Length: 143
Image 1 (cartoon, rainbow, N blue to C red):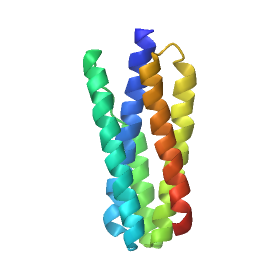
Image 2 (image 1 turned 180 degrees about the vertical axis):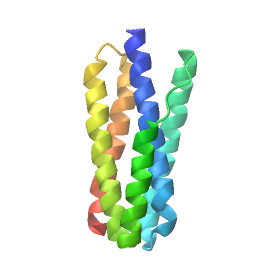
Image 3 (image 1 turned 45 degrees about the horizontal axis):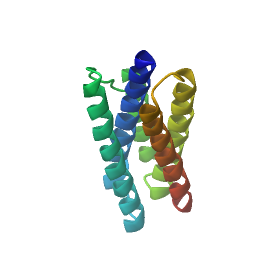
Image 4 (image 1 turned 180 degrees about the horizontal axis):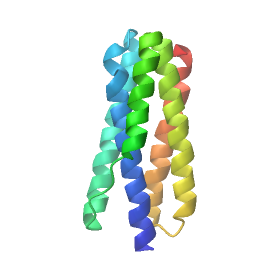
């Protein structure tokens, strides 16, 4: 049980860090005030979950996990290219939606894979999944 708990928390840690970084990469380029506020509110929720994940990992005597370097690099590259070609809010909403969908997919896979994780850690994963799914919905008006 504890091994699955730590592994699930590590994946949540990497996922929440990726979400925070993705928002930070684009938020200052957003033109619409409502869109900007939506992203900043979501970042705040990601930050809160990150703190909770870090606390839980510390209790398990684990340092967590950073997002895979290749995934981070590819995300930054795609964002840079897309924003160079189409520097507008619709492009940002599209990029964020894609990232959210990948996060939801990955986190659900890890939730299934680490089924012996404790309920508290599963709840964290489910809350992160919900946060990502809700952000994808919130992006729709800006596509």
